Structures are given as C-alpha cells and as structure tokens.
Length: 330
Image 1 (cartoon, helix red, strand yellow):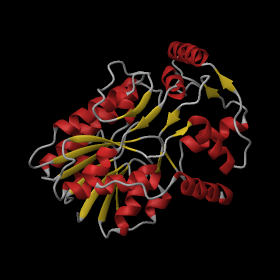
Image 2: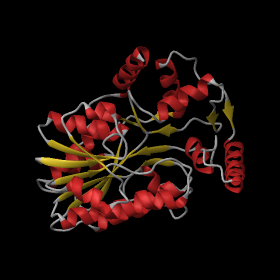
Image 3: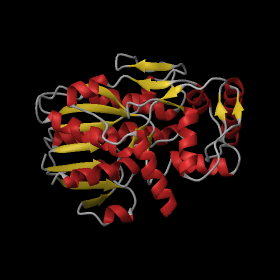
Image 4: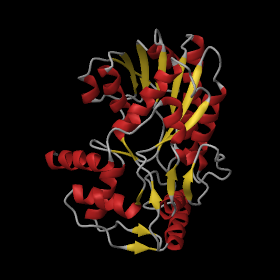
C-alpha cells in the first residue's frame, strides 16, 4: 500500500485508522461529509463530499491502490431511505469507483448485527447465516452492503469485510457518552434477569484489524471474498462493561434491572408512537436495543487470527485505563 482512501475518516474508527496508516508511511485521502478539527491537523488530503455523490467518491479515490470503506449511516432509528442512500447506494458507488479506477483492494467495515436474529450468540463464527428478520434499517442495509462487497471480489478487485463489535475507547462519540449521560440521569438499567457475555473491541484494535486485512490482500489474500468478526477476544458481561465505563467516569455502578420482556414491550411501543408522530429523534428504547441488551454476543475470531494475523494489542484493562485518563482530562 502506498496511497489509500478512507471513507468516514472523520469518524471514531476512521480517525483511528487514519492515524495508524500514517505511522506506516502510507499516504491517505480522507473522504468526509463535515470538517473534523483533529483530522485537519493530520498530514492527509481531505475531500468533502457525500457517498451518494458518485463523482465525489471517484475524485477522492483517484490514484489510490486501496480503499477502506468505513463510512455508513449507523444508529437504530431513522428513515429507511437515508439508510439505503448511505449504506447501499454509497457502498455501490465505492465499489464502482474501485472498478473504474482499477483499485485493487477494498476493505469494508460491516457489523456483527448482520447475523443478529434476537437470540443468544455464544461463540458463533462466520458460518452463521445473515438475519432473515432484521429489526432495523441499519441492519438490513448493512446486510445488503456486505453482500455487495463480497460479491464484488474478483481477480482485479480483492475485497474483504470486517465486523467489529461495540467499538469503544477515548473519544468515542457513541457508547461512552450515552452510558454516562443515562447514568447521570438515573435512567441506566441492565436488561434481563441473567448477565450474559458480550464482545467489544478497543478502537485501536479495530483499526489494526483493518490494516492487517489490507496487508493480507497484498500478499496471499487468504481473506479475499470473506467476512470476519473482530473483537478484543475478551468477552465480559454487559454489567461488567457498563460498570467499568462508569468507574472510569467516576460514577457509581449500575444496579437497576428490568425484565427483557418489559424492555422489548417498551421498545415496540415507542417505535409505534415515534412512527405515528414521525419523530426524528431516537427513542429511549427500541426492539433491537432491547434484544441486544438481553442476549449474548461473543464471537469466535479464530478466522481473523488465522487468515490475516489479527491479535488485539490493547487489553480491556489497558483500554479502560486509557479511557479513564481521557475522561479525567476532559
């Protein structure tokens, strides 16, 4: 790799990946929708544009040999057409740009949600089928996009898809602030009567997996045309994860608990109400979130270890120490 494009380079994972690539002496083009002050201070070439604009994608990808397609519309709530535009049409534009510009490698950021059917996932591997009943537009469109990326794998364009689960760390704009704000408002609760194991991944480990997969595509390409789960390989209970975050933030542990049936019923009701009233803000609970919080999610990542040498370099304990330090400084 000499010059690469990172879509979503101003996002949490995208920015971590850009920083890693720069340490490897790789030139980086960054495609973003809005300015990011931290990204602007790095030695990268920034392109402002939207994935739905094909020419914006092609301009950013020109002269690159590899594309990391990290950008997507995430979240559990929103208009279906927005998810389709970003996650499906946007991914199609990335693939087309790679093919039209003879770019040889594409690494796609997917999600374990593509296999989630509302049931426990205890040590599952990549043989698990896609969900037949996605509980939100994000999951449905990420399934479609991952299928497109893997189907595009060829002799001239090598593709792979990574499924990092619950990315976290200093600077996280999603999980960490949400947990802290709910705890401060005394609205944080555990779901279900029994604590189940979940996998997470520290952001720098997720970035490392992307880099290692790309390197493998330049060599034997054992990961070409395949999808991989990526985690810290240290499953913990949701209670442990939440309480470690709260400890890092100097807050007391969560003790409140609600039944999974109640959480699902509340989620279904709120989805109905928000849908009827056409409210754009995300409900406090949805069916998808209720199911996620009440079920196990941990994965066998031996395929990633075997095929491109992935091995987490920052442990959960080390990551939490870094998180605590960053929260104390903020």
